[in-house]
Image (cartoon, rainbow, N blue to C red; front, side, top):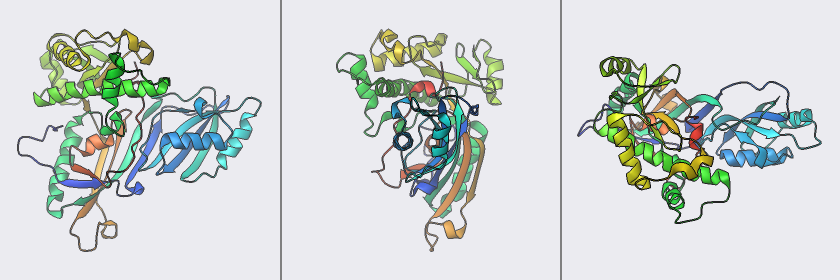
Length: 376
């Protein structure tokens, strides 16, 4: 997907990510702190080269807790060093303080526990403020380093298209197709509700990405149109664009951004031309007049901004001893930023680099359902 700076014939420098887990560091920013009492235990830990689901299973089983009663605010990549929080529920008849004590001294391969604190409720999907990233981009041609900096500077000024990344669509990339077959009644969906939510979220993401692609192509992904549902950057409030001149000025400063559909039975549609575009694309993907009522148990639907901002975006050339090789045939860059929940670090980097994965065989974390990104 093109960024605002990518016109015809504009190419980005190539860069490689995830050559090693330490090249992709992510820290979850909690939405709140545990209260110190209750039957659930919030465990904050750092995992290396482990999926979130595997970490949940390993921690829960080591503590004698049921993994099915565990909660997580979001999923983190496997090929990374990731710090996040999960919740486990103390087994019936086991004192919560005993679970806390065991958790604090837990020794699990690839996982280091930082703290364990009781809380009254299970940690729910989407209960985080955002994520902090520090990413090493390797194998950059030295003569294109300045270009990469110019792209990153544009990202800092203008934001990037808020596309869902490849992780959203499953390891094989076919989750949206599988969800569509279920939605149309052509196949039975998974019995597990969580697995079904994952599939449905991929199809929701496919519709959103298609709308975003259309808005990027016509240059309106940051430009409010009459009838757009705009979201305030500071508060997240939604309102209809009925004063295009004023709202475009506000969008120019980053105060507001147009939104796109996370389809669902109670999603709020825009008006005018934006509504016509979204309904046309939804009909093309789902089928004309698709009945969304059967997805009610999977979420109401919501709105997601077409633009995302990378806060505190910084970058620097790596020191010589962290470079790719001694001959300096390639350079590496360390990029750090903070993203709101639901935004993808790879989407930000892809607006500055033609990204290459260090290995095509790397497993990807299954994404959380769409309500984690934009709660209804």
